Image (cartoon, rainbow, N blue to C red; front, side, top):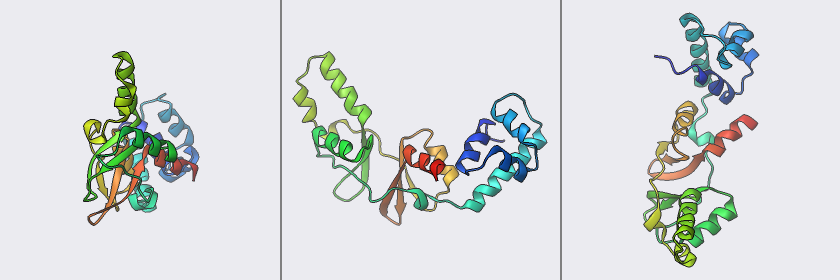
Length: 191
């Protein structure tokens, strides 16, 4: 079974191709690619196969892996850090989420601006002491850990993961080497 036709545009952009370039590679017309991406037609099975096989072949050729696009060194927080400290770290680095690592450098959770804003909102609605929110420990409010992927994970698998999670951690051996966020995927379009 093939992915949804909307994947053509997303994967074409990740590869840095224009509609014309993809059309030439897949040996179809540019107007066909345009019409598919604008959901103006339902192409034949044969044409869909040609386009997706061309994209797959290009993705295999580009060979971009997690280690090629990850951000490093990774900025982390401890489960014993206070939310006040976490917000300062997030602000300093302009991050919206951070992995939570224990003393053995294992990821045990994550903390995000959404979690913190939710707690601040709740404290305002229920007239809690605002300082009590700032003093909360990360371990009391952290979310699930980010998925961990090998450094050789291909770009298309990473982009699929990032549709459901805000970040993934990149591991080499037993060591967390970097992080890939949705913002890192945007960088691919700029390059």
